[in-house]
Image (tube, rainbow, N blue to C red; front, side, top):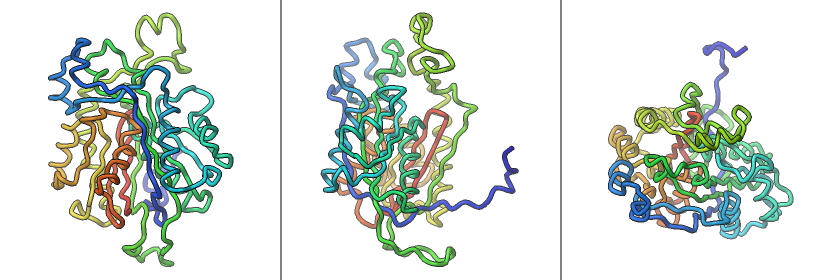
Length: 352
């Protein structure tokens, strides 16, 4: 029986003393512009007007989620100059694993040669990377892990219905990875004393869910509830179904709320944010949140115009590009927010 709300013990919402040591990404080999989809019968003008997406990367024949995860992870380790044998934890956030069993993380572990790593998958859909990042941060903070490879990877085109003209054009394939390690250890002895400005890590975070809206974004079949059958295939229930209007309204309402809650936990304001990296789902959602929060639009990172919605991969891919562009520097406050199927959402205010 769950505890009454007032009896739930106080939780700490920070994980300091950790850092992002490196990052890497890999996208689907086939670049599909709106004009390419227009030739297949999709309304390219509707796509850009309603979503802001101009192109997306699709998996080529033979490419799967583990392929993107492996490439992004390998690039991450090469950048960090860390031996695969020194990686002791791999978490892959994905809703499109290669197989129901084994985990995609195990395929990554073998391919990279991470012989000493535990490996697990996390499925929180578009919030998956935030869940995985915070989980890995806890492992690093407690000393249970020294080098944690956290990857968001998807091959969403395999669960998109080509006949669904309002959903199929929105999604893309790829992966992004970060390597988490211990950062500068300047933890105060008194919990009431704030961390110093030189301490990197998660200043505050929020993870939450609302299963009552599960049907707003779901793949109905090919699981234990509705196994694969000829009837499933004929009814196209193996594909993702999305109530776009309901999800849009929920995201527009939720995004500013979780940002404000995350800032409040860190005793910060929107003016303290150097870069805002939201899940890359829809420019109208992002722009509405930016306006509602009073954030300088120049501080919002957007790349969905080139990649579309890559679910769990969207935030780590954005991290890679933001670092490459010099938009994240040591000491910066980077606010990340993921939201999607479950419904789930997660946020993280990270001091780089």
